[in-house]
Length: 425
Image 1 (cartoon, rainbow, N blue to C red):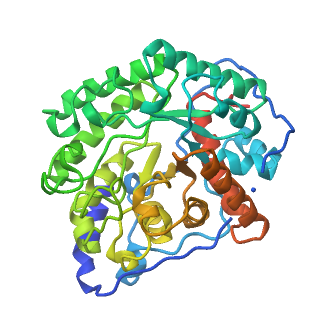
Image 2: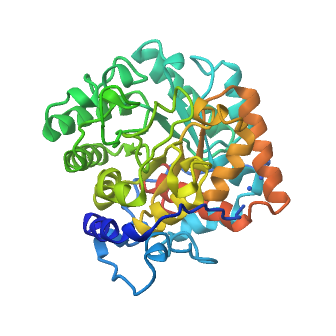
């Protein structure tokens, strides 16, 4: 179990006095006009788990230094998933580089219907996912028409069906006001209540054509004056872990992708990352004992997605935001917690990054290089296009490897296949 693993980590970390800074070199691409149509096949059978998750299989601890045990080197050369379905692997091999790169983008957009300027951009770029925000919403009928219209645009262009997600945390912290959860996390009285609210929310979201949520927030609260406040279920790690299990399982029962956030935890942040750069002054020992526990619970119940936040941690000497850090995404989340699902870098247009003078295009390259599978960009068309070109050029210049792109794409497509957005063959 991941919780048992975290207990071992917490005991060993006392010997660490220095932070770890990471930097993996990996890889990125424009958009080809060659369509690869996806037939509307009958409902395919569920696929096996993407890969055996280390926390649930009880990986034996090896006799190594504590540091290498906590943050082991990422495997070089292996495929992202040893159980990749043949249809996914074939599609990864068939797609041109331009479309591979576009599939790694999860984008916000302007407009409230399919006649907006974004529809033209979406027709030209085979973006992997869309994020609906309050600016795109007027009422349920309009929202359903918008998602259906954009899906029609994608289908007519011969694109792959997109993930359509929204940040629906609850109460005032949700993008779609007519959909639950009706209360913010901090006011939900029990995991059972949270599960009921998540189930109802998932059903309503699916009626609107939305198949994923950038939620729940699994940050462990510290005080109401901090950056998280009522966005946190509790200030007790095990209590937050209980909410994590309940809500994620509820979303998954309704076939809605849940991507909890903000790994590895922002409960102790100096401010909300929506306000600017946020420092989390917790050691690895403190993270293992406190903030990582709810995320370990999410891994244990089979969460298919995970949003990596923008906090600054001692692990990278407060220099590299978590979303751009290989020490966080590739080594801690994948290597230590054994997460095999979709890693999503939090919104790259966030003040937490731009406040550090990091441009959206540079952050897009860095996030993919660090181990993200999808990068979320809420900004306008100019930032979106500049980021796409930057990633494409980075791949062509071998600053980001094609294997890194293929590994990320494999996870994106395997997730879509499991959600029955693309057929099994």
